[in-house]
Length: 253
Image 1 (tube, rainbow, N blue to C red):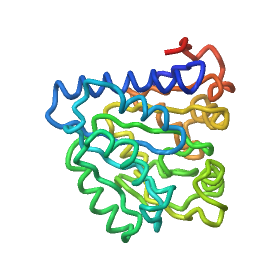
Image 2 (image 1 turned 30 degrees about the vertical axis):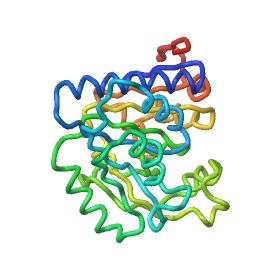
Image 3 (image 1 turned 135 degrees about the vertical axis):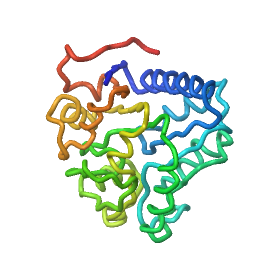
Image 4 (image 1 turned 90 degrees about the vertical axis):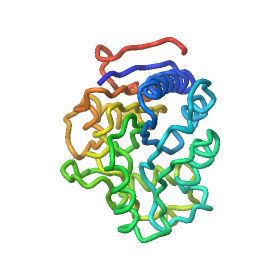
């Protein structure tokens, strides 16, 4: 695992987008179809904007899988992650092969059907974030590190639900759905490469616990340290509680 620290969210996002674009171009030279997992959330806005503006990527040859979605939330809701990905990635680039998680359908049927699709072949690249409670996708602590199932129906803890409220997606805590569909931890780790984009001071405690604490289910994203090809992109704010000797710092990208 590599940790790269940039002065601010904009330089972090541009650097992560350059990295991701380079990986996609390289994969597209080798393969007819590239399989990608894409993250959502406020922390990914600038990264996805920079990535989708990058030239030289044949988006039509990407097959995209969805990390997580709320159970019971319609696609018209501002917090719908299907809506987010369609607007910020899929429709913007012309990607045609998108396996969205439909939170309005029976969740067991959704995880069965999308799980079957993702297990059909290996995943080449995954974009992820780290939550304020250390979650990876919607795998809140204590996360299930053992299941081999590709997708799970999970209960969201209060810290996760408050993050969604504080980011402005919902009017009050009661409006945040208590359940979600999430890609499992082991399925995320099956990706051949992982790029994690984690800006902002509100993530600093989780970053410290996950990157320099014990690897354990109470800090779900700590499991990324066991993946041999993961790069974590931080800004000065999100890296502020880390021990400095472990970090590689960069100027503005």
